[in-house]
Length: 160
Image (cartoon, rainbow, N blue to C red):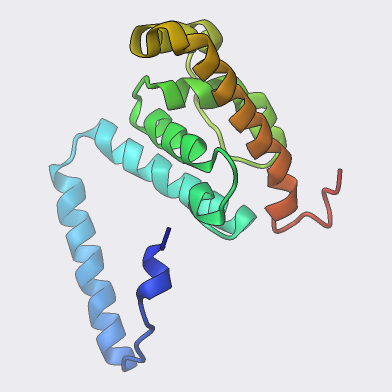
């Protein structure tokens, strides 16, 4: 899967043009923030903070882009938690939050009783395959957590 950076080429622009683009971006951001609810502004700020932390710690704002197993689940779950949504991915990240935090993933708020709620949600959506799907999600999260130390940028200081 190609990431946006994989097919863009850097452009050497004069500093005056770069500064003008920066000012346009700031103006647009302020306009967008003025039309958003306080909850939506907080969700955007939380997602941005997670992205900054992950980029600093792992070199990318997206775990899926790094190629970690279960990275899509963690990316989606963190985004859903930041937005305050209860989804299978947000419940899975809530369930794995203690281990993810130990591995350096920024997980702030988690949902209550994620284990039972995730299984009930999968029963509703997957029917007879709920148990298989539940175990698959848990295995992906364990694989993700096991792989985190291998890609973490400060791994020399946190060797297992």
